[in-house]
Length: 322
Image (tube, rainbow, N blue to C red; front, side):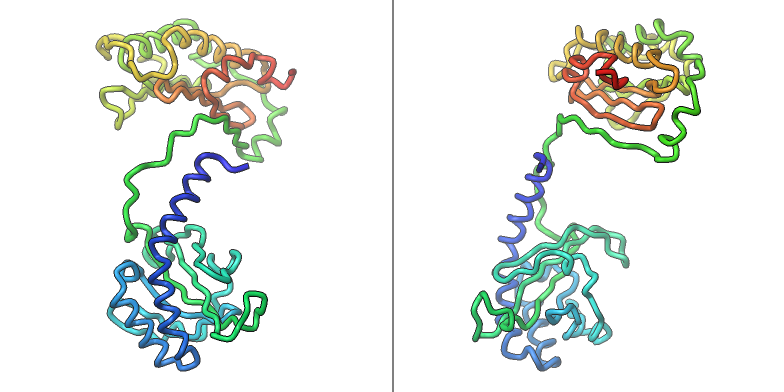
């Protein structure tokens, strides 16, 4: 089942394909008549690279046969490099997707081995003039253009914040030995009620919008609404005085979590920390702006869940008894 994130990526790929389709078709038309003459094919591709505004953004242009063998040189903006001729590219990201009969296809995003930047390849089929769509013999090969994502037109909007429940399995070696361990009381455990009261006040009245409690290692990580790019880490010994360190602030109007829900959430954190000596909460966080709760258990499993869903599922749910 596709998520909203998947859909937004699909939409961006469609816009990118629309932006590149005419230039890729032009490259096909230039290469079609000289497909079997390497020198002329190289020259035709270089001409396209120099004359097309979208293709000028590409890192590299080249041609391959239906099996993935490169039949042109590497066509760069400033040179033709014959070194790539004849290499087998059948394991490239674009060759692992369904090949286009018409239109163009975009590869999955991959990391360029030379410069370490994220890239995408655009592939367009080249077919002889005498073919039908049901006749695979009409396929001569493909024109491929490699692009750094940084060189493509900028998308002004970011993907939306996903308020969905995500469950992520952790280290298999930890999961396999979880029943051989038990919770060792930490300094934070010994001061749990005072600690929770302090964190609740920081979130409700002192400008903290994201707080994470590391129960097992007895520390807290805090993010300030007025200074969101820097986080603060406090040991258990420092927590008693943190309300002096952060001045009073009004509760953020754009918070998804209400101030009244904060104690309920931390009450449930405490319950999950002490509910079982084997499967227990190791760390937990609350972000009142995006309304997300994060939970990390002793089995190294992690959940990201909207706060309202977290409150609707009690202790027995998390321990597998419901």
